[in-house]
Figure 1 (cartoon, rainbow, N blue to C red):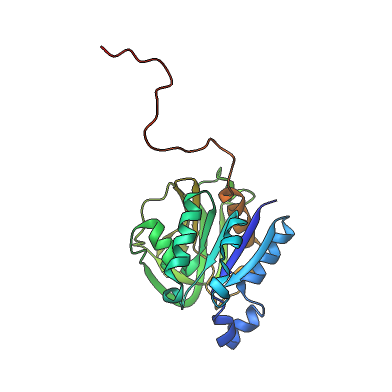
Figure 2 (figure 1 turned 90 degrees about the horizontal axis):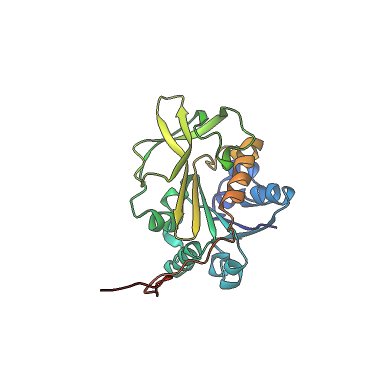
Length: 240
């Protein structure tokens, strides 16, 4: 069973009545409920929990961490970011959702500004599947339409993804790399664009299916132990 922690700032739902109606228990609760229905063990954590809900024990028992942030990136303690970073390098999967492109942990893993263009007028998003054989695209059609979303547009200041699974087109004309896979040492990282807090995106069954697929992809696998540093030759070496 994959052990998932869904992390959310949990601020918008407390301060905005429209968002509270969309997500009475928070976006993290909606996502966690779906993942549990898929047979995963899912817990939630928020910014205002002690240690942001990401204690050493929680991180040690997390196979994949989902991260949603927006209005309070600066409030995330650097010491917690460092712990998450090290867990990713050690094999924990990380899925950054929507405005988590500006989170401290995503920018640290990417090494870039992660900046972009944006516009919020509730336009249509068409999410094109450009790697149909990728595990994250399992069970999807050629594209996914989201009736109302915030626009993100290129240039998106990120490193070239190891695999680009989705590209978005917006009604206003922009395009955006919306499903980006990365490998960082033993860990896998997936950035998934949809999920603005003012729209019911995380009530969309196809969006939730993509998130569940991403969790399965990002979960650790029992591959060879990675080692570094000086080592002895495997075969006898004749040196003249």
